[in-house]
Image (cartoon, rainbow, N blue to C red):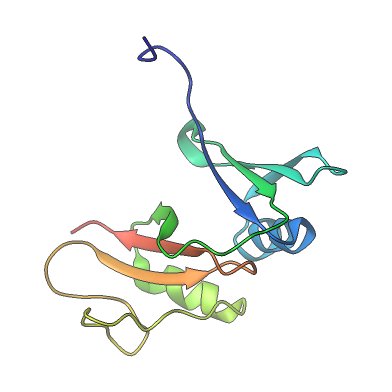
Length: 126
């Protein structure tokens, strides 16, 4: 029934202006303001995988990763984001190097948070 229907992801934030600035200026994404009054944004992501971001009055940050960015050189991306003020998370149960990038089995991943506290990641497939 929905196999041919376009779908998109979404997640909430508490401060749409802070989110817009972070996603646009810090991460370098194209951000479309859909409705300023109601706090609605669209992140224009590569591959046509746009993501809807909306203000939620009783917001609580997600406790899981809401958005993953697959990169080809995680070390340079982590360095670039850190230079832009992004702090990477130390995650219990994962072996991480000095830049907080995981290593071992599976993809190399580094987690960080947006201004609302939602968890994002950059990851490099092995």
